[in-house]
Amino acid sequence: MKAGKNRVFIFDTTLRDGEQAPGFSMNESEKLRFARQLEKLGVDIIEAGFPIASEGDFASVRNIANNIKNSQVAALARTELSDIDRAWEALKDAAKPRIHTFISTSDIHISHMLQKTRNQVLKEARAAVAHSCGYTKNVEFSPQDATRTDREYLCDIVEAVIEAGATTINIPDTVGYAMPDEFGDMIAYLFDKVRNIEKAIVSVHCHNDLGVAVANSLSGLKNGARQIECAVNGIGERAGNASLEEIVMALETRKDVLGFQTKIKTKEIYHSSRLLIDITGIPVQPNKAIVGANAFSHEAGIHQDGFIKERMTYEIMTPQTVGVSEANIVLGKHSGRHAIKERLKKLGFKLNKEEIDKVFKRFKEIADVKKEVFDEDIEAIIAEDIFRKNDRYRLLYLNVVSGNATIPTATVRMEIDSSEKQDAFFGVGPVDATFATIRKITRTKHKLLKYQVHAVTEGTDAQAVVTVQVQYNKRIIAGRGADPDVLVASAKAYINALNRIESLKESNGKILN
Picture 1 (cartoon, rainbow, N blue to C red):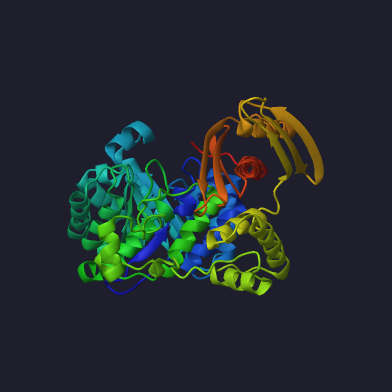
Picture 2: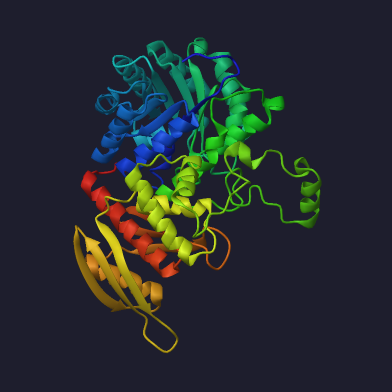
């Protein structure tokens, strides 16, 4: 993988590091759907998963590898040879496969976690890279916890794996410990001390525990790195990874200072963020840079006055640059099928006639309730009615009686494995009664960890989007539902979480600790 000195490769780990974070689990079809969007976004490398971790992860990596043609597809593997064999089994039919192998190199990890010596770790790293090169010449190596690793030893291990054939060396700040100047200095140190460093591309993978993952990544670039590992919406372990959208737009907006370029199609950034939210059910905070609801809002009077006179007074990039449309033509109950078809095309959805008919029918139902239907409403319809068509559980009917002088009671009718079941139950409130009835019908007892409601658009007639998190074994499973009726949205969200659990059961996967 070669390019000009100012070219930065974007390595997206949303489907690996991001997906393994609590509450962000995706099933196989959801992962493929998101991988296709990453390819459309222009991501250079998609880290599709950790094949040895579970049967579900293996199947997802293989599915993505078999369907993605323009982006490289990477699979993660420890330095154990069985891990590497499993990774290649998943990747072998990919158009552009990459094996990414890793081992811890800090003394605290080596002694307490691995219980090995530095010399043993170095030998394992070299052997793992050599074994990987037997399958493909596109091999990446990561010394885990690099920022807390002795620098001389880090240089030794980097030099050894490059000699063994590694073409990308990733330097991870695994625990988000480093400061920008410190991290940049480490990258510069490697370029100064590792004699064969020019034979590999140096990558950075920064976590956000101290809120400086993006700053650290940019500092790495300034000191010689040319690949950044990041995730859409900054998701990932603990406080998350460096945010793809923040990295890309910093490089795009400040070319005058940074001088780097990527192949990311920035107009796909917002859609990628929205798709991840739709799939995982977990929204970003309103003040999130680039993709948050307030990212291009101007509330203060002084700001509004300046913006009206000249938008550059308070806006360093336009919303259209990242795919947020200002000219949002509102649809209503009188809008026809052609208008819906054109809007779907504009939003980037490629649906067949049957799917368009289904969306149009649901659109008409919502338009009869709402005065105006926005793009966000259309996206919610797509998520609810198109991409969940194979779910085991489906809501058919909900009626709730509640008030300050009656016991809240919910009557629910559901479709389960193509047969209908109906029951009623009570609770301490309308939502509790609804969830209790669903648990009774489905015979499930998963603990509810979180319940959250927000509106898709403004107004009292806006679609409510409900996000729930339930516990399944040791995992946190998120569910999302949208509807103009908040109780119906709540039921859909809870049922969506149950369907996600069923999907996990089908994969028969055992996640490694």
